[in-house]
Amino acid sequence: MNIILLVFDSLRKDCVGCYGQPPWWKVHTPRLDALAKESLVMDAMYPESLPTLPTRRALYTGQRVYPFHNSDFRLKGDFVGAPGWGPIPEDQPTLAETLHENGYRTALVSDVYHQFKPSKNYWRGFDQWTFLRGQETDKYRSGPEPSDEEMYRWLPKEFHDDYRTPFIRQCIKNMYDRTKEEDYFAPRVLTESARWLEQNQDADNFFLTIESFDPHEPWFVPEHYRKMYDPDDGPEWVISGYQDTRTMPANLLKRARANYSGLVTMCDRWLGHVYDTMRALGLLENTMLIVTADHGHSIGDNDFLGKRGYPSHTSVYDVPLIIRHPEGVGAGKRSDLFVQHTDLAAQVLDFAGVKAQADGKPFWKAALSGGPALKDHVTVAWNAMITVIDRKWWLNCKIDGTGGFLYDTEKDPGLTKNVADQHPDEVKRLFKLGVQDAEGGFPDYLMEMCKNQADAPGCSALVARK
Image (cartoon, rainbow, N blue to C red):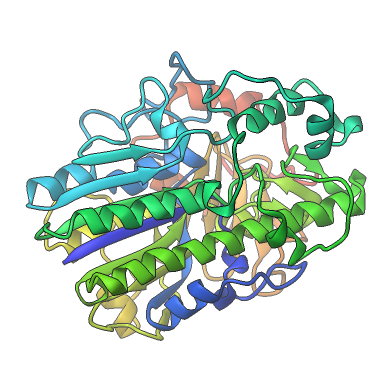
């Protein structure tokens, strides 16, 4: 069986129509919605570790990254990112390597430039890997320098600073020569992926991983997509700024939402190109198609623009997962089993009929049959903070058990009221589960990071760890 794994970076679950809609308006995703009707839709999918590279390490290997042992990376050619922000360890085989050894032709098409920085190795095991350059601050072009007029178009003058200004400057240089929609990143990634399918029809079995950095910021999108959601003239807003939206002009927040929504819709359209290519090549009858994301993005949720692990929020942590079986198995079904990226990796191996080491567990049969549950909770790690989620509660705290946020997801699905002080026993119970999931305990550098991490405003002073 052929397998296509398509990952959209920062795709909010609630921006996919089959999951509902975000707080601001409905986002149009007709191709994803049509795909969902032919697929098994997972309703409780979460990352294992965050952000970008730790997530992919878990997905590409099926092995846990938390609690970040041997993950304090400080490598040339990259910034010092979150724990786990580094290469895949040499002793961890990748899905691509394992499937290649079992007769699969493997390929990666990606514009996630973090995967291809010096010292990174996320293409390990792929027979072909294609890196489409120019996202974010990838040093794709060195000139010409943008004019002040160009700079102020994409970032209002009053918001220029030492971070935003150079970021936007490099982004503008990277996107020179765009004249049509096909020149934007998502269309290029998905067109190149469709071309790979055309060129590799002779493969007995293949594993194609497609990585689209869109709809990750910066939210540069053809104007017609933005106008679907905000037809007004006015200044643009295409980055997060990682800021409190209560101090942000309402028109700029609206524009951020419109540009993000437009980018999601463009991604949806070009997913359709891959699907139509599969149909034309007869691949819908013998190819598993899996669509997911690494994480989402807060765009005004709980008054924040950006993504963060503390306090964590559903807009970032809830992840879409849609799996289309070529024989129609599971079509139209939904499952609320807890699954994570490590489980998805294990499931890919299981679909291929390959037995290999993985910390995750295949979930397909249990999801179709309605149980039994593979796990009663999930732990999601980011830096020195963890989020532990079960059927009722959402706990977010530091790894020493302090600075807790506890939410009752049944009564408060938007995670707006911290009830940690009212339910100390639940805090302790959930924290204990998170510590148990940190097999081998926490490394010293992570504990030091925890000690230096300030409590987030509004958290509980409750100490759960005795």
